[in-house]
Length: 202
Image (cartoon, rainbow, N blue to C red; front, side, top):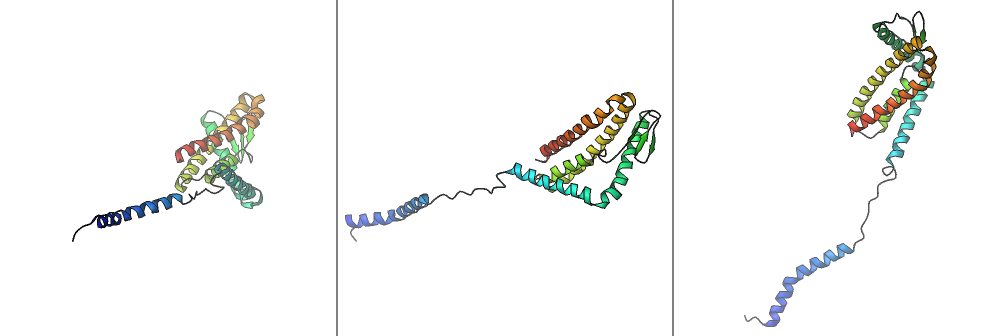
């Protein structure tokens, strides 16, 4: 069979046809509108979500404190004397002549009483709620809650011991240390422990 110029042109067109079809398809795909997947409102405002969840958890805590008989009837009846006993033991170890009766710690020259609010529960609750509100792995949240609660509980013993020592040696500074200094420090330490946990967890 003799190959004419016309037949050669047809064969070349047949070979180029798949390539031309692919080019047309690519052009059509390029002309398709690009669909942008925008994240939801909550995912674009993580700080707002965190603060909202934190506020809800703290609200539930205060509802539990105010309206649950278990908190005042059972929990505080154990927690307050426990804080007094441990703090009294530390003061005795430091050389103070201490007598602990219930929630009272007394010596010959000074006495304090561990009342609600002096137990460190609220800063601990703030720390726990902040940990729970942050999106992190649950196992790291549990580890952080355990470690932070223990550290803040130890810090509360330090507070009671230091306030008693201030009352014995610097009685005029007792109210300032009790209301202005230690309450502020305790909240700051709770936030500091949360920041340290946050760096570790992330």
